[in-house]
Length: 208
Image 1 (cartoon, rainbow, N blue to C red):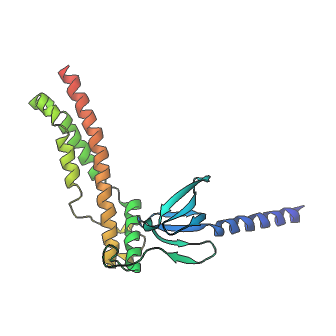
Image 2: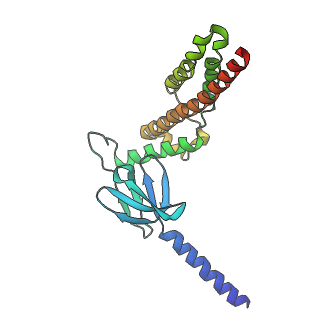
Image 3: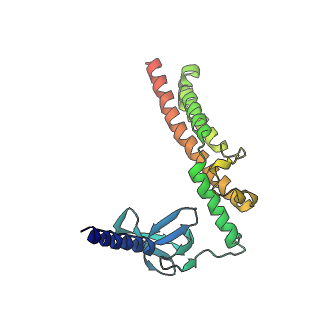
């Protein structure tokens, strides 16, 4: 009985391993990685199974793809270097995407959230100081913060870097900074919206 169970689990493990290896890996230009099954390819797009629901299908434009590594082992590049828009070499673009991916995972932008929150509260509650005109122009403060939050220098913490050697490459740093600044803006927008709501509620409570 034990031998039969051992054989059963061996074949089950082998089958699971084969299934995992048969999946394809898509490397997107925004640094994201999708592991799924490629269903169809053409000159404009690639159709894949939805990783969260294999019954559904997702279509990805070829311009959004850097490369596809098929489960059988072959690697197909979609990124092409040119002198107009894709001026990075293939290796540089790979580093750029790694920078985006590391910033997406490790850069928190907490200061941007709290700064947006404070600006939103101040803007929403400004009617308490300058009257109804302050309430009308309340969004100006969080919007101003949003437009400037991406300007300051991005300090890259080594703990957020997947490979310290990447810090020697400008392409990696540019990718990291791009995603970090985008995350700052997103976080400041969320904080500003929440703060503005709190400020308006405070203004309404005190006025009425």
